[in-house]
Image: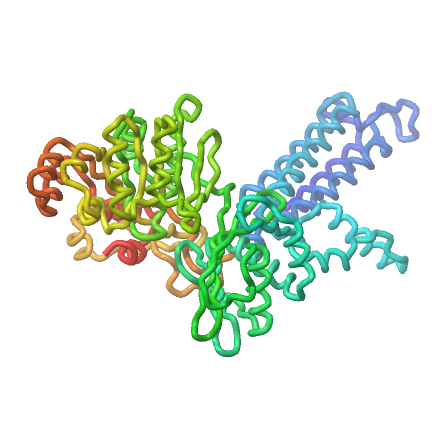
Length: 582
């Protein structure tokens, strides 16, 4: 650990030595002026007027270094050694320059730059990782410091931090109500919601969920309270519940924002609203349903700022990225993503669409609902109440000269047949189906009633996927895997030294992951490319075992094998892989 205080002693001793003697003229700096007529004789003497600002900056530097040391230890998400060294050595460099450069204003300017640039950079970085009330050097923080100083001197505080208005405003989040059509903002609904006594509770609920990286909020009624659960990294975690009256009021307020009927508590309803935060905008998809204990509400949080932009961001290995990119950029064919609900299929398709030149090709999507906005892409939303289904939307799309079509999900025979026909008539079609793996996705299409020859001629590839939680880099711990497990997994025991897992007995809750041991998710994939032998098998006699064997001959890597790659790399644990893929 580096501390500047020993340097202070050395620095003062050296200065006093120079003041006392005159034999060191060859090493003296412009802080020392030659005074032939001085009472102690001819020599170099310290210029106190120039030296005083250096002492002030030095004392600030010592205090700053000490503060950075304790601050990085308390935050745990900034590297202590890196920042402590940067602040310390930048100060040492500044002091060296002010003594070495012949022109005092230039040396003093460099000293100030060496002090202020690193510390202001550190403040900017730390302020991005802490809550608003913990940020420093903001107007609010400076006002608080001024008020404390005035109070310590017995004076009246002069900085009005507007405590009451801030407390009334609550967390820095602003709701955006939607009209009944779910497309236009409706300020009247927000004004109506603000009059509710539960408005602050709703804001705190949503803001807490966003801070904890939740993707869904579940409000579930019981006899005496409203349970709250957040889905974080695919797993539900309990939060502070509401008492029943407050919880019912929060549900009514959210229904008002979504333009729902608040008098209807048994019939399922759905809607949406938005929210604005200082650095990003959010959309919420809300669905309600009646239950024996009361009305349940689930909110899906859609954050455009965290949307995946490239295939590489999904967690694919480099070879798979190249294979997928070549498949999705073909002029025609059908590319399917399969997996259970919540496995990231739509996100993969959005990343695939970004691989296509959206300015030279006409791309049209039909989704239920539209989750992320894409530039220069025509996006349509299914509206079953108005009779607009995937099949009817797909028919209208084919009359609009599309190059690429994305269908949110293939659910019925009509949609599947039209999609295959579109792929056979010169269009590139993207879609998703629900199935356990890539091979069974073929039989899912057969179960829907699509002719085998049509599937064989239309389909280009099927990408099966799951999402696994990634181990928290701050608290994961290594361990030696058992040799029998390595043998069972067909892994060389001599090449696998350690696996990683979440802490079994954590001494304290990790501030990075909140004690879960995981932070974020990535995909594991298996890609089934429809080759000519597989097309022949589909046309003649579709057999699950034969297609799997042929896919294996073509080099297909299964989900479990791709997941083991992530385990070996230390990105996830074997327990998490077994939870996702049996």
